[in-house]
Picture 1 (tube, rainbow, N blue to C red):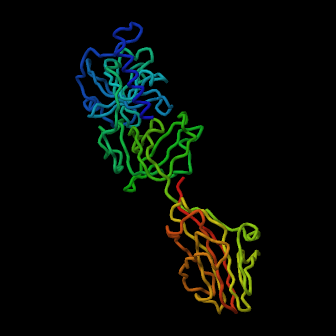
Picture 2: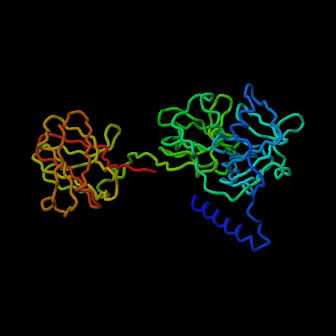
Picture 3: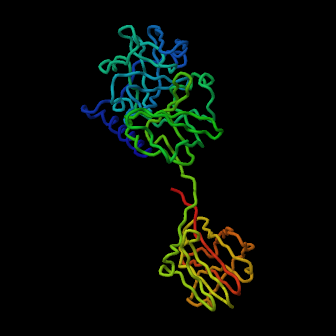
Amino acid sequence: MKILHKLSIFMLAVGLFAACGDPDVAPIPTFDGVANTTIAELLAMHEITSTNSYDSIPAGTIISGIVTTSDQHGNCYKYINIEDGTGGIQIKIANTALYNKFQVGQRVFVKCDGLVIGDYYKLPQLGYWANDAMQAIPSGKINRYIFCDGIPSEFEPTITMTTIPYADQIPASWYNRLVKIENCSFVEGGQATYSLPNSSTSHDIKLADGSIITMRTSNYADFINETLPEGTGTVVGILTRYNNYVQLVIRDLDDVQGFVAPAHTEDIFTVNYSNAFNEGWTKVTSGSEWSTLTNSSFNGFFVNANTATDSWLISPTVNISNVASPRLSFNQRCPAGGNNETMKLYCTTNYTGDVNTTNWVEVPMSSLSTSTSSFVYEIPETVQSSNFRFAYRYHGSNSSWYISNIAVSALVTK
């Protein structure tokens, strides 16, 4: 999107410069004048003592700033924000397609004669005075007050927030400005959408230090059905407040950057014990053989060695060539008589079909238990291939070995 934005700026510049020889194309806009008041000085003309109050502005006051908002995606409704390095201000305008005239990065000058400075629940605003109240500048009068100068350029936030203090502890010059919050996460990431369909919606963003800022999204935004991302990343937006609540308003989804879902473990191989021997499991038996048992108390493989036995149970091929941190896990139980000499676990990458000619790697086993115990094998890179197999071998007599919950899992991200 940034590439497209830069390209659109370039093409606009080309078209505007070409206007010198083309009377059908408007020239680059210029303002015949200078700003005589900073936005910080304008803000100082209004003391926020109660909500929704206002003050007049001295005649001849002119401010200038860079546009930082866009209503193109529906989340910034009937206003633009501008900032000049000393502060930011929201300008109320009765128009719903302001992005056509005031693009992000566009410098504007504002003649404040006839306008008033006030606040909406302690958020500073600049508006039009009519009927004894501050209103949005009428669409037909925009050109009387707001003047573009030059062409839009790339604009990045100059304020990075690492904590969210109380609203009154944040410098007044920060409100209505574009800010950046890094290493943050959405509390409801992966669970909620940006907004409910019938009302504006608030979602909390947690910063690295644990402090919280609320992101406010209009139900008219065109991205309301998108899911909040998981993981950590960066959020850019306009810093606002509603009374003593600190809030953030994003302009579009480009303001939500670099989020990567946290890695989590998923099973990539499990066993259907009721049909295992038709799904690639192989048994090679001398003496007692491996069987399956599926009932309300046990679901897995077992061997009941009531005679001299050397019995193998070999898994199907499991492809772990392109996964992260694969591991084999299972539960096991052996009544008295079994030990680490009679019960073995192996793995291989080149099963020949003959247990005697296959190059097996023995996996060290923890002590076997007469009660159910869990076993986890972190599969090393040396045997991570598309032909990975593992095998259980009982070599003894007078004991049983029960194995269940067999799974091969890996770390994955969404």
